[in-house]
Length: 427
View 1: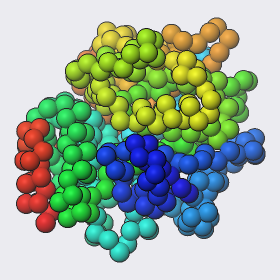
View 2: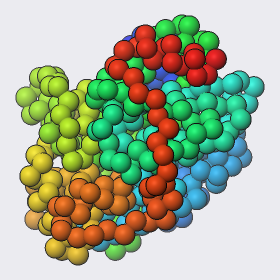
View 3: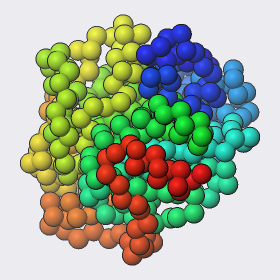
View 4: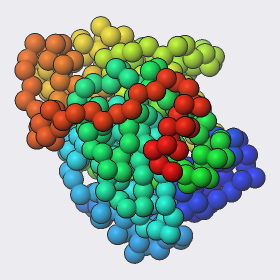
């Protein structure tokens, strides 16, 4: 597999190099030189998730890694269920929260960890990543206890739910967490600055586990195929798919799936009040505003890093941007969407509820759609309980961490301070 840097197309790398580097020169994102096209879609959709995922990822990676190694990576990473659950007659939720940290990030993080464990055994690595909620837990769980990998997770202090925070800040060992006194965009900027600083990048052998890492995106392609496979067993036509969107890695993976041949009618990019993309799709003006804190905090991203990949896929496939639908919803909309789902018999959480509402607002009367359930409702216990006037029982994964002490350092949004902290902690 060959990839190139979107900012410097002359920089070309293999998949192995892209996984290890994370980012290219000048923070450039790596993008595949070609997207494999799958011709046997019906046969693929008839397979089970793991066997199908081997074929999908093999189309990208077998020429470099060999199909046998691809199969091994998939078997070790994808070992939990992902049911498509009926919310009502026209909307279905792909529940991606049945992994070890109860969030969709488990798919990408576990596959990336397996890749690095297999491909970078001779190197000692530092994973430096930022999280707006669920990435931190998924990455920490995936890499916890690996001898040759140190993990540092930055997150916005006070702007993720307490249970989200407890899932990755209570581990210790090779997992180091930093509460940054700012928002997610500032955390992400500090990560990018670290990759541009040769002392940090080379001295600590940096890698990033954000959705900017191509291995995470390829893993996420697989569950879009599973969504459509389950949908078509009981329904006619092709689904509309609504994606709760923050940093836009999830939508990027969906577009890769469609480019490979997956029959999706269209995608809906559903955001909260941090609606840079819906506004851009409406008026053609890229005008990020300051990030605002919302009930759907994992989507509190004003400048999504993966957007250049979205535009590149659309251009490569000759798809007009107008084929993407953008919907930005308010806090009141979010609560109403949660309540509507619950009264209809489906318990959800803020991010998925926004996507479900976006489906309702954009589907015609003869269409059906899928929205992605990106996290377990209990990860947003306080928000869900207050919105619905109910009491949620904690699953065992959250029960195990709720009383553990948080081990995070606290820093201002200052790269010099972060740099000093990294060398004090890791060198």
